[in-house]
Amino acid sequence: MTGSESAAPSPLPLGEMHPTRWGDPAAATTLPEPTRGLLELAFRLEDRAAVAEGVLPASTVPAAAAADLEAAVGADHVLRDDLSRRLRTRGKSTPDLIRARAGDLSDAPDVVVRPVDAAQVEAVLDVARRHHLAVVTFGGGTAVTGGLVAQREGYAGVVSLDLVRMKRLLAVDPVSMTATLEPGLRGPEAEALLAEHGLTLGHFPQSFEYATIGGFAATRSSGQSSAGYGRFDALVVGLDVVTPVGQLHLGTAPASAAGPDLRQLFLGSEGCFGVITAVTVRVRHLPSAAAYEGWGWASFAAGTTAVRALAQSGLLPTVVRLSDETETALNLARPDQIGAASTPGCLMVVGIEGDPEAVRTRRAAVTEVLTRLGGTSLGEEPGRAWEHGRYRAPYLRDALLDVGVLVETLETATFWSNVERLHAAVRAALEEHLPGPTMVLCHVSHVYETGASLYFTVATQEGATPLETWRAAKAAATDAMVEAGGTITHHHAVGTDHRPWLEREIGPVGVTVLRAVKQALDPDGLLNPGVLVP
Image 1 (cartoon, rainbow, N blue to C red):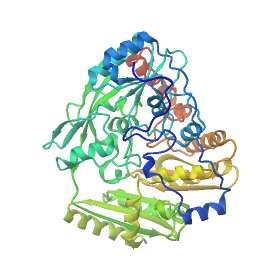
Image 2 (image 1 turned 90 degrees about the horizontal axis):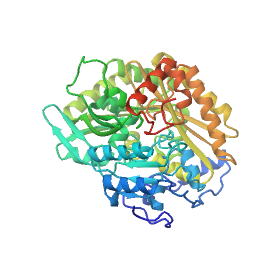
Image 3 (image 1 turned 135 degrees about the vertical axis):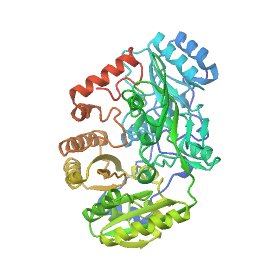
């Protein structure tokens, strides 16, 4: 083994996220004065920036298991030191951060193991089987639904299977327009490698700077450019997966009738059925032109009608985001301007990318539809402001937690005919179950011919029992989603947070199917126990 189980925390390794905050500490933000002024009208601001260091529980991995793990991947890549374990504890939901700030490290893995290829992953799973170790696959650590918190009871220890060394671009097929990527590549790393070939994946979720290719696949991620490029699962044409009972290589053709599509077992499986070791994706040529602009709408209903018209006429732009009245009033689409003067009604951000002629043609067609339906062009500034700040919201959340304002997000999706009902039901549930002043904001940012997602942001007083308060409100909101005909998650995944509601969505037969797959691929229940499968 390497390192020390009792060593004091060290400076962060390059590229690692802070254990009690989002992202790069150097990029942390303070509250702009207009934002602070707005918050002071609604909330009681108090200093909650202090962080308890906490004490890690002792690693329980037996010496013989540690030795076998070292034999599998090399001694330098089996880590039990304090900092490595802290950095692989939970994800980055607001409850995760509140617990981390309080010094709660009870979910820390016992050991961090870093394989370099599929053969080493297979070797680690064999060690886990022989020593009955739980294995949690770790990509970028951006999970927000408890997907990195494995059940510990009944296991000799918990292994964080960190794919940080698996960062290669394995193949590019410029004729078929596909590329094969290893799972540990972060979004910017994958885009940089593809850009050397003049290509892009086009997948830009808010977690883009830290989330990984493997995580995108394992959670069915959806990026901010999904209207133009598609959800991540729609981009996947092939997968290599290591399971405790062997390897699978899936995706031999762009389409097949050779039985059920087994790729779908692993897309969204959250590390419970196997470890994704390579992903083959559809790619596009890098765009050479882009146009971003804002549009104003009298109401959220009018804006959703316009988005639906674009989707159903085949004229979707690359990016479309529609904020409801509350989100527009607070300027959430422009995080550095929250509290400043805002657009009346509802703000829509539209972005179109491609070659110059394609951008001009699509922009003209989109403009015609939006103008005909009553939209007001606001020019390029609102669109460019959103584009500039598109990855800043999680940093703002840290600044709000520092002053005692709990901010969290949740999302769902439904068919167009049900959007208004679902929007109202979730908002009402949150407002009813959060004590004191509360702000509930919503936007549409992932759209289809048949429906759309609704993404809610909630701000409320942190109070004395923030975890219990949010847990009750989130449960009420999830109940409301189910009762109003929405899904329990559109792109955040199931994890442990949504697991109690999964049977209500897929039914008892669906649960039986998932349990049968789990039993067949992971008969000893080693992979992410307690996550996803009810």
